[in-house]
Each structure stands twice: as structure tokens, then as C-alpha cells.
Length: 482
Image (cartoon, rainbow, N blue to C red; front, side, top):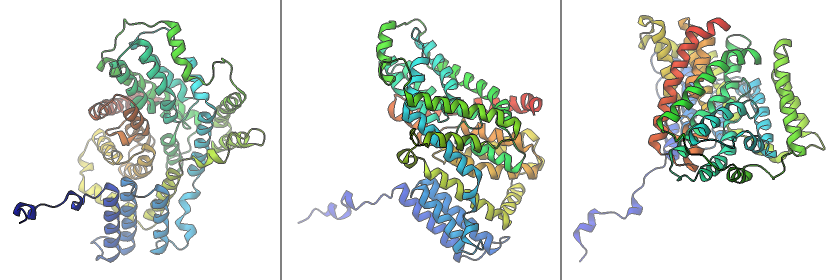
């Protein structure tokens, strides 16, 4: 006779625990079906409910990454057309015609070219000190992350370049893999390193997107103006965060290493033992310096920032050079480009149908902004930005969704939209609570000694630092330079 107790137990294979992707697909479908078939909510028109349904459907797919960004973004624009929210399919995909989409594509290709020829490794190998202590090395690492941000737009590329360098330096010091030096170094590579990308308009996806939105909604902003607005605050934020990492991890300032040992350990971080650059590295270096010079000069002559970028990519793709080739193009983050295009399309429909204005009106009535002091209004808007940001796996995607909505709030509430946009960029760029929030943090978490508590803890530290920097910049610095 069978054991009676077995009747109340089930094989473990019978227990179905859905994955986040499966949950995402189910929730997104429910949102879409409800928006189509449910009675129109009070205060909404049917087309408003439909566009909110498309937005909710797409947002859940983006957050859960249930399907690749390319697929979910394509679904979004097709639904806009299928539901009659736009007259033509061309109108549904108008977001993909934004300058930002093509500009970001060009910068991704330039960043890929730098990584392809190994220029970042060469620069890293030459810039690091050969005689130092663990404490001074972490300080030097932070300084070099800032310097490299001027030549390597991608924070991920900088992290990938320096991870083996840090590991070899840790070995050269004779330290354990869990030593505070290695932990602090990976904090610099993961959490602090992306801050450098915000210094320049062309420094990465977050800066590019923010600059374009400022250009569209507020006023034109040049490469030089962006540098003036952002370099001093970002340098201060970078320095403050680096000092905090050195303090929190109590780094040794007495241990030294033998110079010959360090030179040997650094050899693997540099392509080849020859101190000279190869042909491709010289070409990419010259093209990047030329592009930066063109952006600076173009700021005074009114040349669009996309022009130097497209010329640089064209040179690197020219016959006989062939650095930007089919392989490099295939490696571009097409998903992010599709996400940006789809989000712009959705926002356009939300504006033309009056949906965005209605949402802002409802939130303003719900949250007593009129009874708040100006600093509390700004703090609330930034808190909303942080809340939205933590659900996204990339800061660029979070900026695309968050910034237009926050800027609409700023316009309605009479807040300086330029300052608000720069503040949202800083708070989003300095907030990482989970490894998946930022690719460089995910890399440092996956390949280094950090645990979840450290990722969250230092994410809170950089968020607080970012808030302080925003306050100082808004109150004292930006009013002077604008």
C-alpha cells in the first residue's frame, strides 16, 4: 500500500515557478488587453487609454527584458499604428528619425573602434603608476578613469580594460583576492568610473540623450557649454566618491611593490611588448583627437555635433583602413537604439493625444507640489527619477523614459529645465542599487570580490554624493556659468 503521506506531496518537477521574463510577458499582455477592452476610465479618452496601454505593455517588456529590446520596441511602434493612434506607419516610427538615434550609433562605433584596436589597453598600461602603495594606486586609478573618459566614451570599455590591470596589480602587491585594495578598485571601476562619462556631451549614452533632450525642449547646447556645465561638478563627484572608497575600505598606505615585478604584471594588459603604437592605434587615436577638436571648434561655429562624428566613422570605415567594418557594426547595441526610437515615438503620441499633459495634471493634483518649497519640489522630482531608474538595466534606457516626463513636470511647475535636466542626469548616473542597474557595476560584481551588500551600500553613497553635488551646482555654480 502506498504511503498516505505521499498523496499530499508532489514531485518537485510539478512545481512551476515562472521566470521574470515569463511574468513580464504575462503582465504586459494583461495591460494591453485591459486597455483595449476595459471601459474607458473616468477622465480618459479611449485613445489616451490605448496609448497608456501601449506604453505600459512596452515598459514592462523593457523592464523585465522578456524579449530583446529590438523586438519589444518594434512591437510598440506597430501597436501605435495598428490601434489607429497615428495615421501612417511612417508617423509611428518617427522617433527613429531623431538625430539622437544616429548620433549615438556613430559614437558606439567610435567606442568599438577604440576597443577593437586595443588602444585603451595601451593607454591603461602607460598611465598607471609603477611605484605606489595600495591607497595611492586606488587614487591613481580614479584619476586615470577620469582622464580616459576624454578618449574612451564607454564606461564599460574602461572597466573591461582595467579589470585585468587591477588583478595583476593586486598580485604584484602580494595581496589576497579578497583584500580591501581589490574591493575598492572594483568599486572604482564599477560605481565611480561611469561618472566620468557625464563630463562631456559625447561621453556616453546618458550624456548624449540628455543633451539632445535639452536641445529639443529647452535651448541649443554646444559641446563646450556642456563641458563648462558638467566637468567641474563631475570632477568633484568623482573625487568625493573615490575618497569615500579609500576611507571605507581602510587601504594600506605603507606596502610597496618592486618596480620590475609590476612591469612584468602589466605586460599582459598591453598588446605586445613594443612601446610604440601600431598603425591602427595611431589612426584611431588621431581620428578621435580630431573629432574632439572638431567638436570644440564646431561649438563656436554652429556645426552640429553629429557632423564630426560621421566624418570620423567614415574615415575609419574607408578602404585601406577598414577598422569600422561589418563585424564592428554587428556588435553595436542595437537594442538601445531601438528603445530610444520607440520611446520617442510613444512620447510623441502621448503629447499629440494630450495623454502626457493629463498624467502630469493628475500627479500635480495628487502630490501637493504647490504647497512645497522649491527645493522640496526638486527633491521630489529627483526621487521620482531614482525610483524609475532602479528598475532599468541601463542608465541610458532609464534616462530615455524618465527625463522627458520629469522635464514636462519642470515646465508646468516653472522650474529651470536646464538645471533640472542636468540634475536628473547626475542622480540617475550616480544611482546603482543592484548589479544589473549599470553594466560596469555588473562586470565588477561578476568578475571581482564585491557582494550585493557592497553594491547596494556604495550605490547609496554615490547617490548621496550626487545629491550634494546637485545642490551645490544648482545653488552656486550653474547660475554663474549659464
